[in-house]
Length: 393
Image 1 (cartoon, rainbow, N blue to C red):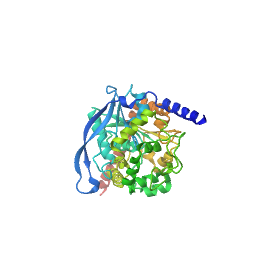
Image 2: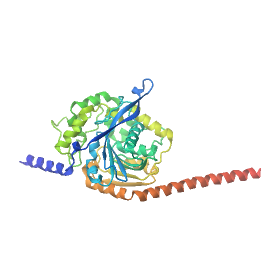
Image 3: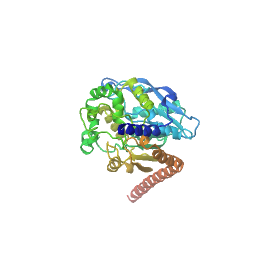
């Protein structure tokens, strides 16, 4: 009886959390996007195209929100935000390359850099006829949105990053995953995905539903303590469970949809975020460009109970705020998926920030003009001193 009661309570909570969202009811658009296939660094990169899929909602609205998932995500992880914001905003919600119906060029090791994915997002914006958008990302979607704003401040008018902070490539060397694990041991699974990518893909593909359930947990329905700490397995910490409990923020049909979408391509190309070649190219490209400051309004929403890492502390140590002059920070008492676990609170934070975005954009513009004036004033002062020295000679 007690077990039945717990199951009933769990089901009631789940249905309430995602009530009214049917991912099957949304039509996906498709666009052919130019990209590069690097073939794992072997031979010359090959120019090609990939078919990208996205959901396009309320296209006549004045402001566009581009919602970018992470790993293991899909467009549908934004279910609660789609329902809340679709009346007021134009929503573009893609599957990233290698996920769901979006095709990957084929090389997981070197053909999935942030700049590659930003190119995909720009292609989607162009296909949708959008000239400005707010980029909203979760997990790996956060650094993708940060990079999109850093690379293309002409196209993006604001950034929202949920969970992962902005980590600028300002250091003289890229920090290795081994060094990060020393401070953040639950990033050990990153080393597994990087060093044994094919083995990891096979493990994840063996039982897609089990993999999805393992990764999408909440504060109330957590993963085991040892989860994410293995160099040789993603799922070993769950070996004591014959069946992992269902995803706590999905209805049964939503979970079925999620599994079906992953079964289309498997996890074959989704580990692009973790491979050394892609990560090094991410760092090298941004580091060589040198413009680490994002001159736009940025909202960071940190879950303070994320089992992966203490992201507010990581942001502080990395000095993220020094490169984000127009930053707003908020925290939520959730695990890794704040937009799914506490959608009402997350939506309220996002709505307040969006309502004030026009003011924030003006403040950012004034701030940038002041910065430019200070730089010009220094140049003028230096020129006058130089002229004076020439006159004295």
